[in-house]
Length: 83
Image (cartoon, rainbow, N blue to C red):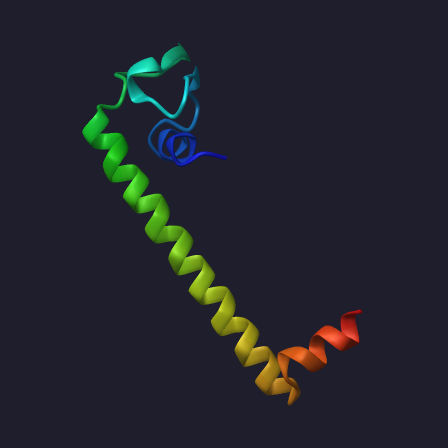
């Protein structure tokens, strides 16, 4: 899913739309409650989506490391167990 789609879904979760080449100016709104988000609002939402994805990745890595530590095994040993 493109960053533009993620940003629009964050701002307008019930909207339906289409666009070309991740270009804001080509967005065609099929279903939209309220006003269309501005380019500036979408840019800010894209930054938020990116920050959320980074935070999720870090949290997942931290949880994985904690579990491996609790089990007393390395990532390589876990991979062997799962293969």
